[in-house]
Length: 358
Ligand code: IPM
Ligand code: MG
Image (cartoon, rainbow, N blue to C red; front, side, top):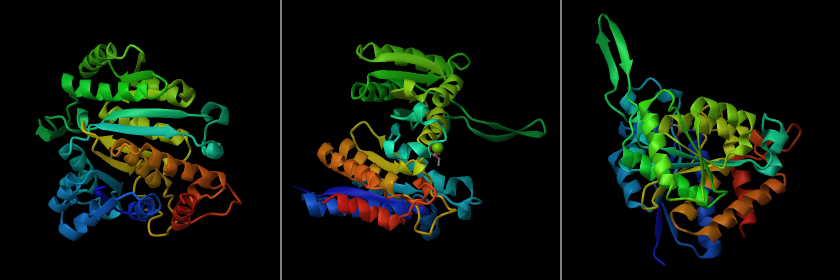
């Protein structure tokens, strides 16, 4: 079998530490199951800015473009906060998403039964939680124009534009309905159609696409209500479909229902199955360099990569069951440990997963 290339972009802070463990997992798959994944490293974010004066160097972008899939760590940190907007680490993420048309962002929020205590919500509210947020990732207010800060009548005025075309809505709606078909066949589309025209169009187009998926039960919810429902009764949701900015906000809320943002992976896909896979958590500058970060979100991102880009469901299962066994064995990094429990380091947690992969 020819080599399948994974561009590895560790980025900043704990991004580097957790990605190193995910790469060990990929190497273990090669050794133990005769896979042939080749990892190509490239700098991104603040690390790339320090090296090359830009958060997304041309070489990094072409490494990402030429690869079959991308494994990203995290970007950002206080060191780069005062850099001009176009040179901030976050620009690299937005640049990769839009340059590679990674419009479909899948963010699962799953509560591992072993970690039910980690949530701030009552166990009966969250036990068994398994939600998939499908967030549109290359449009909406993040990329709309006109945008800027201008001088009007002696004071400054800041402005952005929330916009969606019918085809942008159609393709993300298809992603969400397809995800729902693989799951419990329930889809809730979240918008603000009581106020925004762009949401009115969104709702209309999603409803129309819904007629192609008669088995999926489609509902619509305003985003303010969706926030409330997420913390009141989150298990009512199966798949949530929403726009770029609403998805940014709702996915942070959903991730905290599980109590362990260090556990959650994500996939950002184009229309050909190419994808960028990354933990939902950020670069966590406060704990960077200490070797205590939880690498499981990055390792679970490898599982998503195996499934969505390479159709390697069996390998994906192996990685996910290894993680479940590690949790069942009581191995805990600091973020998911209860008081008095022994705490594993980043590399000890990585090693525990490797041991379960034999
Ligand atoms: C995310 C992040 C990014 C976003 C930032 C870092 C640009 O919050 O992936 O959710 O807003 O999309
Ligand atoms: Mg976010």
